[in-house]
Amino acid sequence: MTIALAQSMPQLNRSNLKRVLEVIQDNRADVIVFPELALNGYMLQDKVFEDAYALEELHVLKEASRHQDIVIGVAINEAGRTYNSALYFSNGALCHMHHKMHLPNYGMFEEARYFFKGETITCFDTQYGKAAMLICEDLWRASVIATLSELKPDLIYVLAASPSRDFSDTGLGIESQWHALLTSGALLCSAYVIFVNRVGFEDGLGFWGGSRVITAQGVCEHQLKYFDEETVTVPLNHTLHKVEKWMAKID
Image (cartoon, rainbow, N blue to C red; front, side, top):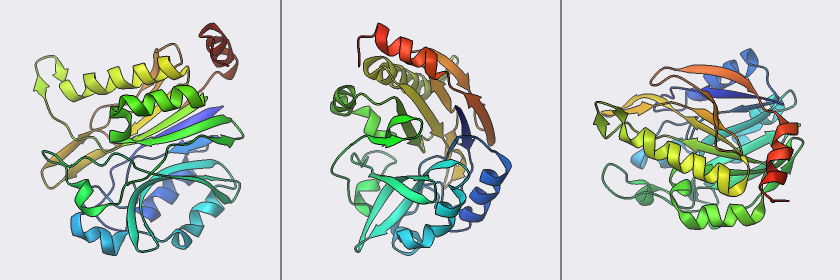
């Protein structure tokens, strides 16, 4: 199995869909993964009511998924409510949609003012194994990792728009915190964790990238650059993953 990590630089408008389709066309993998709000940009604020997509507007992604599975973050308008959502497309259909449950509303974050929160985290079957999707702040809750450890996914997709902060001589404090969370999730769930974080700048916020793949043994197998837009295709070893799951005594 191959996964393309599309560490993109979304614009703060609806122009991103064209670029997303170009990246999909140029990077053939079994699954391609984009960041949180890849179709909208992050600092939407009250623009979300204009820029959120209805699902029927994303038919072009259904068609593109006939050639490879697509995981992407987008603001969704559903029955008059706006959600920060992750969508999984495969074989010409929308297979699963996750609405972000934990909306940050502190410091630089105001998501709870503009989005409705999701209610559940569930797993779903794909041709590459049982999967789950989380969006950024979702992973910062022990209850979420506890739920996933019971659901036993093979793959956990984590979509993020994490701004840079906590600079020091040894690096970014926020990156160290994220790596600890991603590693903990992989170990406790005995799952591959695929983390895709955006890059670029919006309203003074800089997004650091550093997308990566963590194995079920907590090893970072692949990591992308900081601050640079790039798409990298990486292999996942399903045979090794089955052995790791057995060693962890997780069925």
